[in-house]
Amino acid sequence: MLSEWIEHSLEDVSPRSRSGRLRGGTYTLHAPGILELTPSECRETARACVVSVGIHGNETAPIELLGDCLARIEAGMLPLGAPALIILGNLEAIRRAKRYVTTNLNRLFRRDLDETGMEPDRARQLMNAVDAFYARHPGRERLHYDLHTAIRDSRFPRFAVEPFADTATLPEQWRWLAEANIQAVLHQHQHSWTFSHYSRHYHQAQGFTLELGRVNPFGHNDLTLLVPMARLIEALLEGREPPGTDPARMAFFRVAHELRRHSADFRLCFPDDTPNFTEFAPGSRLAEDAEAGPFTVEGKPLSVVFPNAEVELGARAALLARPASPPGHCIEKSQSR
Ligand SMILES: O=C(O)CCC(=O)N[C@@H](CCC(=O)O)C(=O)O
Ligand SMILES: [Zn+2]
Image (cartoon, rainbow, N blue to C red; front, side):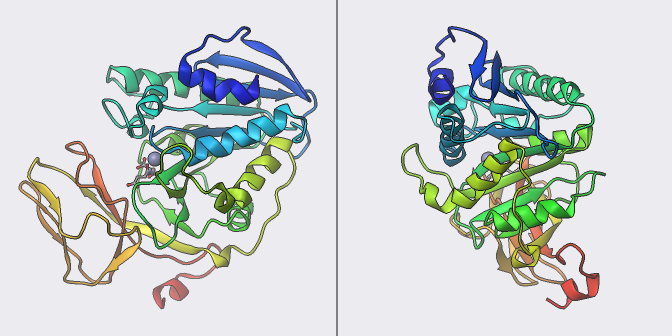
């Protein structure tokens, strides 16, 4: 059943049964694309894990990676030892191989959301599912990895976005992510209302958006590059303590400024295929907007992440970041980089 869940969810096939047994536990299908795994025995070290993929419909590598993990659980190769909520985010967008259908789902995860439509309704359903899941596992450390791929190349193809929130990241996370071959970390500077931010902000979870390479159609992803990330997710599903390594092998950045598209007459002043984390020197003009005017780099260089001039009006068109110190290092060190 598990190995067919993704396919059946995308084909909108009604499940024969909404719950059942699997090796080492049970599964429950709460709604289309929302699957809970409950181990017969939870390990002491187990976290309450939310793993989400396909929040953007054209980001297929994480869906393939998750499919492999589920197949391994079903085959008895991966003994379930942690409660897990597995989410296929924007089913209709995945079917259409599009980032979203009417609006970007990954900007809607807020409890005061009052928009209506397919994506807002899905955001509410996913928020309710996460709320209920964490409530079923009180006292257990909470974790949420929201897996994505980026539209363009990157100086660091695999990187983590740490949402802005009051909840501090535990040092073990940096160690696990470094071992999972994450190459860089971007600290957010303000609330972003993404899915990983939701779990961090409202549930104090260790939540991250993980960018795992570039957008590709199904069947065109090189999953060998993601083996270390798959091992991390498998360790978490087993309820084992994942292995870690020195976080200083990752590059750390902090968002200094967010570029927003204010008018229809908006453009980014660099080529469309500029890789993420490309650095621009002071004096470089980065954007022109009929309403907000030009944006020029001032002071120290800025690195551009997620540039996209085609976003909806009012939405984020790029993050602009500067190097930051690795956790546990002093500020002076980062400034001298
Ligand atoms: O490559 C891009 O421009 C977008 C890739 C993507 O979907 N990124 C996420 C990041 C979420 C975050 O800021 O935590 C997004 O834009 O939703
Ligand atoms: Zn995405």
